Image (cartoon, rainbow, N blue to C red; front, side):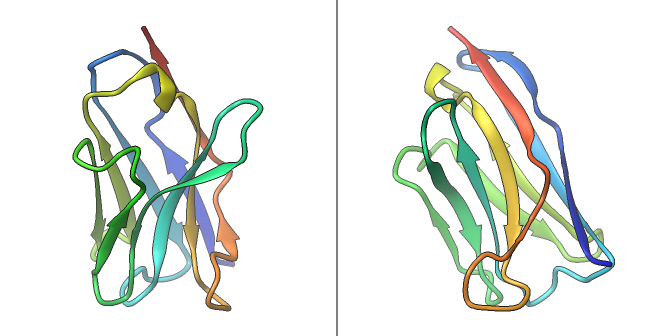
Length: 117
């Protein structure tokens, strides 16, 4: 059974960096649309970054220039490198994949990122 598992969240000071990982067990990430979303307390889910089957990358406006998404096909892993973190980046970060449809339909359990100001 294919499963997404995120890791790498934690507590960091403003201006710091973190790297999130998402391992897709049971399936290759090659040629797969994948992305990162986040949800802050009391807010809706927000698109952070995506990489499609052709490795075309998009970012949400709030993270452009600070976050970098990448994928390691050999390791079946999606990454999110986060630099210059701000308090407003505090959220639960979710990894997602388009496995069965044109929407993100497969989700990980999430990893908490907390940025202290």
